Image 1 (tube, rainbow, N blue to C red):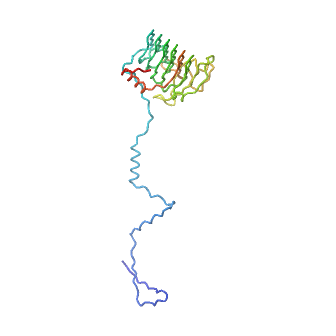
Image 2 (image 1 turned 60 degrees about the vertical axis):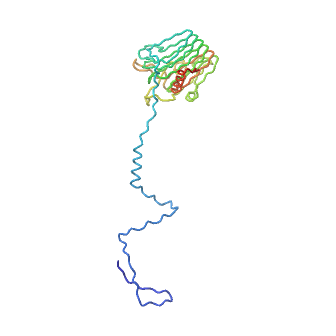
Image 3 (image 1 turned 30 degrees about the vertical axis):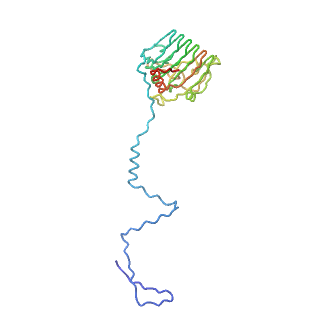
Length: 309
């Protein structure tokens, strides 16, 4: 440490001293300055740069998060006691009900209907699982006289067209459709209610009936509630050559560019819209979405001996 002499300057009225004082000089090279105190309320102050530990921690958290993927609906499977069958499957009962689950392979059937159930003085209560594809709509016909219909269309192969006609005399009809149903639902009854479940109604709009249809028929255009498992922007949907709604040559216009068409070859399914027609005399008609959990619970109650309405 070096020093130098400095002359003392007296204040006013003070005598000049005869001596000199030494003022010490402290070296400043290599000595860090203390940080300036932070001033509260200084909005222009730049935030401190992130530390290496902060950057590393943030990057590690980003890499640890798996990329999100859209949920894929699981495919319903037939119950263990389901009856396997090859199309065409035709059952006709008198004084007895047709009931149970059926897994039907339609792949080798050249013409419809693929499933035809008819009961006189008995109900039809069935669950259907359709397998295979054909170059036309997969056709299901359900008929009863003095009996109701409760049908569940649990599953069909991706891209396979669907056509369902259910007719009951003196009985109600309750139809469960898959959540990817994309087409026309036509409901008619002479004495009873015509309803859609709330979630189906939310995906539907009323459209004009075919020319000449009576006032007791109401038609809905239903958009899919869920996409197909292999859906993409180029995927085609389902079709049904219908007497209601979709075809342009019947005089009825539906705001949809996927109208009814036939496939060009036998190995390619048709494209266009699904169709479900429900007709009852002296009975209500209703359409709901297929609910696998509710169906499973109903089956368990049946096994326990409970009566299911």
